[in-house]
Image (cartoon, rainbow, N blue to C red; front, side, top):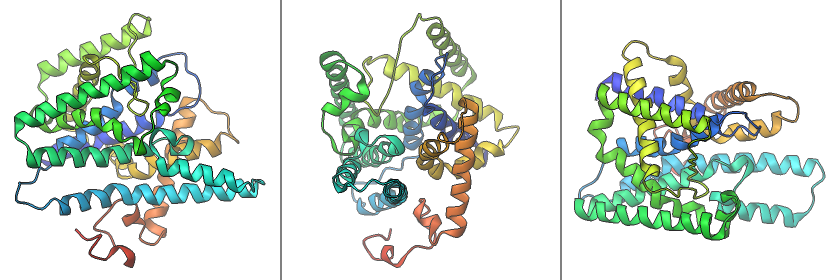
Length: 355
């Protein structure tokens, strides 16, 4: 893989991270921008993860691969979980909250995580789901033939949509509320659909790494058409992985796919001529941006009245500053935000954590 191809991937991840921030804008908009973003931005992250998945042979031990992925994903998860929680609890206590039962209830919700962890923890579901998606696909590719891989993936996709149908059409109501009526640790049930997006990235690797102009043109035209029809209230499609809102089995593949092809293709072309350093820089800080931006907004909107652009600039700016501070001034900061090759605390030098 050439450096240019790697460059477009980093730039794409940076762009998608901006969309993650924009997608959590708490205000009301008079246009369906957030709806568009949710059509594809989270599936795109799973597709990108699958794109660079490396299967292991039947004779190769699985432990090393699982440890490496755990360290990359779950160490930052735990670090930011503790950091944000400590700050929240200190502030809550400082403002007079001495109700021990509130802290116990709140912390128990954080342990369960997933769709139950709201507010500052709104993005934490992604990490646990990505880790278990990786683990599931690793097991599929290690022990099963391609036929059985496809069979199980198809079954997962069907079960995922049956669950979504039950939540949306049987229980009814807003999916962010009704999805919580189905108890599940860390949103593990979402892996039923995310493993399919992950698999698309892996199986369609050659197509995605070298997007051809005819395919890009068709997908881009259809993506723009879907946006236009939604704008004029002629097309009503919604997708929310976190809250199990995916109730159209065909469109839940087609809509993310055409947008992913359109966006990947654009950045593959653009990065031939310019490095797009701003997006690349954002990608380098993406872990901290992902975990911090909601907390930043929750604190800053007490002091500032801002719209979408002000919100995005402020959340990105403070989160990026936080990322630089963590890397440069917090002991073992690089390790805590996912660099498994960085210097680590003694606790993580044992055999249990070495890869």
